[in-house]
Amino acid sequence: MRERPRPFFYAVLVHVLLLAVLVFSLDWEATVKPGAERKKAPVQAVVVDASKLDAEIRRQKQQEEEQQREEQEKLKRLERQAREAEQKRKQEEQRIADLKRKQEEELRRKKREAKKQAEARKKAEAEKKRKAELAAKKKAEQEKQRKAEAERKRKEEEKRKAEAERKRKEEEKRKAEAERKRKQEEARRKAAEQEMQARLAAEQERMAAQRQSAIQRMINEYVLYIQEKVQRSWIRPPGSASELSCTVEVRLIPSGEVIDAQIVRSSGNSAFDRSVESAVFKASPLPVPPDSEVMEQFRSLRFQFKPG
Image 1 (spheres, rainbow, N blue to C red):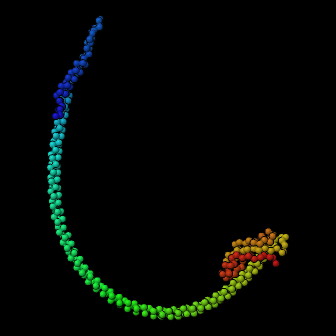
Image 2: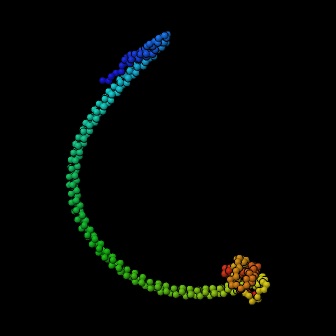
Image 3: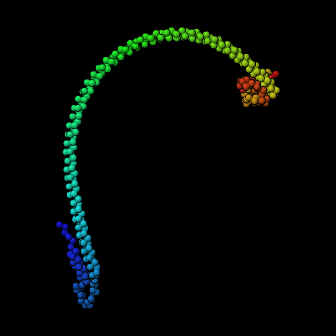
């Protein structure tokens, strides 16, 4: 059993302490020196505030009452928890009893179900055996009919194959004759095509040779025009010999404008070579052939410059 707080004891203890403070706060002189006058020490008294003391007593009493209320609440809470625990225990016992009852019912149901299933299997096996016997009998009859039908179809198939073989041989003979005629016709056609292609090739070669010859004649003709124009634009360097000559390479655009001129075979006289290059640029634009195909071969040309 819990020991209860003792507020009255605490109140008495507080009063005793206050009294002790009052007594020992007085300053007592044990002895008096001779010839000296005894002086009275001032009395220091501690006044006890009764209202504060009562307030402290009330606070202690209130604290005890609060603790008592807390104890009562705690006791009620424990009793309530005990009741709830007892209720849960009874519910659990009831749940276990219900579960046991359901398990026993389920076991009885399963036994009944197993018995029904055993009877159903026995019945199904008997039915299966009966159906198997009927199926075997039916299968034997069907197999007999199938063999008879297969024999009939085999004879018809042999007859059909024989007829098909006869037609195949006739078709092969017809195709072989047609292939022979096709090959003869193909050989005649190929021979005619080869002859035609040979004639076309010969004609194309002849025309290409004529075209190339005409292009070369035109190139040679325009090279002479260019040489003459460069000759007219050339100024002989002082002291150069009359027998000097060089080969110059000229690059042109379709308009005849000179974009480059270089000596590819020097005359041995640098002043003469430079004068020729200057003459080429001075003569620009040079005469070019109007034919675009000829001009493609005329973009870069070489000629020998030899003063006349």
